[in-house]
Image (cartoon, rainbow, N blue to C red; front, top):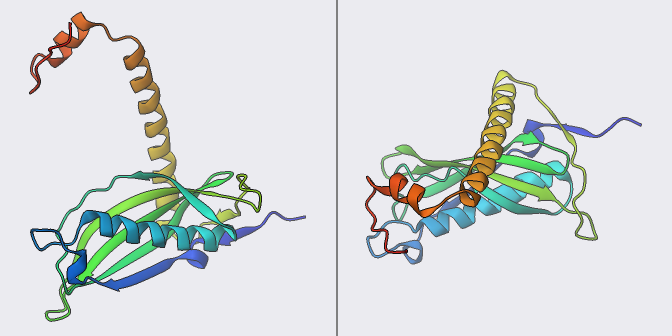
Length: 184
C-alpha cells in the first residue's frame, strides 16, 4: 500500500476579514491578540486540510508585528504547510492588510504554527507526506528543517544553563543588564 501524500497547494488557505472598531485597542490599532486568533484559525484550516483530521496548535514561532493594522482594512491570512513530520505540521502564515481606499497592501507579519494531527481518540496520528512541487516549496521545507534544529539546540542549551547557574555566575552575566539582583 502506498503512503498518502499531498502537495503543498492542496491545503493552501486564505482567510480575509474586515477589521472592525471592536477589534481596536486604545491607540486605534488592531489588537495583536485579534490577529493571533485569526492566524490560529487559518493555521487550523490549512493543517486539517492536509492531515484530513482535527489538529491542535502546539507552538507559535516568530510572531513579529512589522506594521500596525488599521480599522477598516481587509486583512488576509495566507497559510501554507511548509513542513511535515510524523504527526506534526508546520504552517507558515503571511498576513497582509489591504487599505480599501488606496488599494495599498502592506505585509504586517509572518509566523509559523506547529500543529499536531489527532485521531478520533485524541491521540497523535501520522500525517500525509508533503509533495514539494516548486523551488519555493523545497526552500520552505529546508528552512523549516533548519529552524527546528536550531530551536531544539536552543531548548537544550537553555535547559543546561538553568540547571548550572549559581549566584556568582548570575551576577557576572547580569552586570551590564538593566536589572537589580536583589536575591541573595
